[in-house]
Length: 600
Image (cartoon, rainbow, N blue to C red):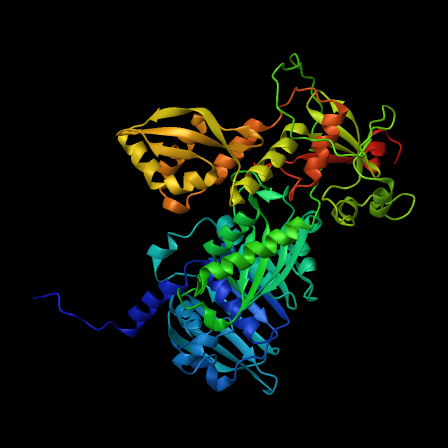
């Protein structure tokens, strides 16, 4: 046998270990910045050249490293953060493995300068490819500066896998931004090729830090969240439902102050925004979770970016509930898109009839040709009025300031219909334009969802049973889910080998459902295979709501418009349809006066 087991030399071992921690310049920056944060720095400066391939320098004003400890800092598994295995269960510091500097030094040329507050002179230490080159005293300010040059110079195969300079610089900028958001009490400054890309205030204010990174417009469209459930505290900021991105890159999570990546939290956010954002759109999020360190394992990956929770359902539920409660408190009325007007030829009004019987007009409602229909009384209007006579045009303050506990919509009165598609309503210093189809979809969706939650849904017996013949596979699926179908309001019994007698159907929106509805459910059961706990899938509920809703190009009377808006006001989330499209937009008096050059 020639392939005998061999013990690898230290240089080879260090290079292999480096591959677990050092993936690219951004991973180097992460490790070095986390060390600066753990050192108690109030200022961290990150500088790179050529995307970090030629130079990475991280400097801080932290506590520094004692001279005798400097060489040990570059040894593998040397750390000041833990002493024994039990300490791993209560880790709160960021860097604790003791591998960062050793791994970085194994694949680059490193120069470290450091000085503690007690030392008169600082220390300079050079190490190339894991081999010590220089170790001496040198004058330097208090803190630590680590300079990393020629990353992967001795592992050319790995250097070839790095992306272009611009892409690597972008990843470093993203990493610095996320680390800066985790410590708002520290000022972070990041420069690439001499250009300042990130500069945070370090004043301890999370919103100010977000604004310094993402801009003032984003800061004006964020929702603050903060909730505590047994063992878990959730806080941070999320974007209003109409502010979304095409990917999850703008979602940042922290567990006990540590930046992490978590599919579980991403899924929780998407579930909380369900029916509020469109498909393949993602809200912006900066969320902090605090929980017992024993309930989360941050040691599952060498870079410490991935975490594992002991009770995933508990964590996910806490995040969903916190976000949902915060979103339900706000008024999320979208601004009109800034687009030029185009002429468009509209077809004739649709003659299709829709059942609007469930939009019952409440007692006390009045219709006045000159004043329109009031959705609220004068007393309620006064209750929701905002500040003094005028020149208050702050949309966020007006639209998001909940003062009426009887409904979600702001005061408005119906003034008409436009293009047989949009309901026009006058509000406080603004006009609301309501998409009647989207509004009706939201009403129908929440009614159907409520129907699904009832323990005893309404059912109607057929005058004569209908015999339904199915394929063997469909018949088996139906038999497996018979209990669920009965709970939904169907009455079925076997009527042959693969046939069933349908004797009663559920009533939804006051309308008895057809045998086609049962077939759709069986098809859904076949695809999901969820067994006896099966419920209508989200997309099925949305599809049914869309079919039932009044369409565009359909003329509504003033009474029907009033009833539609009143029922919309009673929904939990009246500002988007189940697909996530906005139900209404608003034009403020200020915007209109600007259009007509009444305000300079």
